[in-house]
Image 1 (tube, helix red, strand yellow):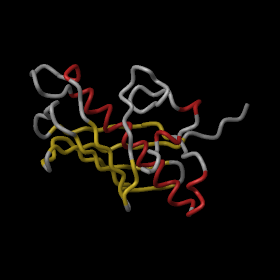
Image 2 (tube, rainbow, N blue to C red; image 1 turned 90 degrees about the vertical axis):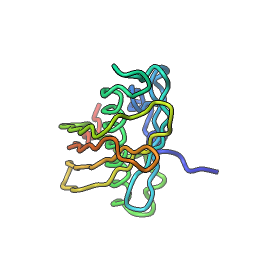
Image 3 (tube, rainbow, N blue to C red; image 1 turned 90 degrees about the horizontal axis):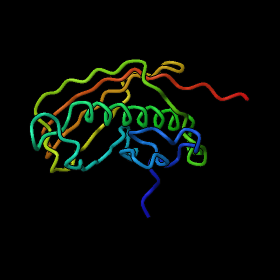
Length: 155
């Protein structure tokens, strides 16, 4: 049995994101899984994710994947920091304070995209994550996100 993705472990109140929310019926439903000190997502685009050049992904779609995968990478890192018993608790949620994406080459929509995220810095509620998006081992885009952990809700 495959482990649950980081996104599948988000509490329902935080599971409506267009990119990664399992409760968003029309969303992308990306799934990120911790692997050693990285977080990995494999995603197969659909034809409607095409940009201005037929057969290649829209830049905003790529940015959305990097944004949501960065957030999951930060959540996984915070859980890891909490220790082995963290497998039983919901991951903390992060939001982007900054997102930078470099488009290095066209990204085809007819292949599996692999995103690999790694924490570059973690300080208090702030986490900086670097992500590569590759197709068949070739890096098509790189991103860097500055993320802020959402404070606990007090109602």
